[in-house]
Image (cartoon, rainbow over all chains, first blue to last red):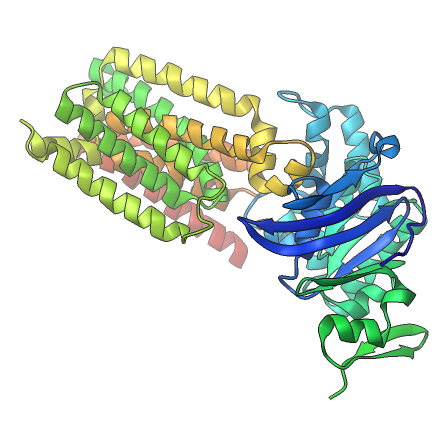
Length: 257
Length: 269
């Protein structure tokens, strides 16, 4: 649990306890996210992964401990949040462009419409994710992968340098999953964005990210992929026999019969 | 068709009901999109209980109605609403209990049964000119506030979590939304009755969302269709001697049926 962040630490969890309505989901959580990190938070449904994201974004107050945003970098820290796409209702008759433009509402200010600068930022975000052709399409009619791209474009349009994604590949087929993880990898490597995302698919995540935070039933392990992805660690966390194999250059976690 | 406009009371009813209808149709688009139709129905029922309380006590039915609706707004707008107990069950309880309360409260008043009928069906032709002008101003103000914060209400309705990460106070905006809706419902109920009020919240918005693919289009269709339904409904009730509020709802239902059939035909083609 001691892996140092690659760049200056942007966000640090110090002995954090998280929960809702007096019921704790996680306790004693300590880890940091450094500038340029690509961190995957992995665990089963209900383990508290999304709760960690909410605390990181500052919309959930920790029940214990503290979440620290480093003072010298906090001024420039701009989160771009990508929610689980299932939480957004298909019924809204909104185009992809209209949804991406929402990212600019806060900058435009109350009672003001987004201006030309905001339009340029929206177009730039659509281009960065390569979905300009989808701009006029209705969001509710897109495939899962296209919706996810639209939501990533919206997060980028905020001017974010720190992307936070909640289950971005949940329910996607292999091709779409690969496409979204590849896109996140590109944004991290080529655009220098810090990326944190959660998933319950350890095998999907482990081969893209630099760092892993694996949680299950209150236990967690944090570090580089090589440190975390060992049979011993995973056996301790998941309490099942685990084998970690290398297949075609990728790590594969297997639970033998 | 314009012959009815010679009568002051019809012109008055047209003014007041059109103002209510247009603004409720606008708010109804949000009600339908946020999937809170039953919340709207329950607020209407609670509001009617407030009016009944006003009739019973002889003190300002509008004030009672707004007061009770405000309490409902605080309850519905609270972040814990629907979290600890199924939302539908809570709404069901409030809907039935407040409906029964409204009937019981006016049952032993001088015009008990008549008051119950008015609460449900409304009596828009009895609207006074001052009342109609006041309603027009009040509903124009509600619309103006909503339009001024259009992008905020849209963003906070569509994705409150993302909006929260950008500094918006989702709870406060939610409360503001319910407050405007509650005031609109409370003011409308006494003038036009629960049935027509609720119809204005649901049917024009449904027509707008059925016919168009963009939010602006849906809002436009909803507002125009509400105004058309008021005019045609009142004319039909004048021409064939039917009660006005049910006739306006029937016209709205007819428009929605035609709209849905047209959309089905377009899709099939």
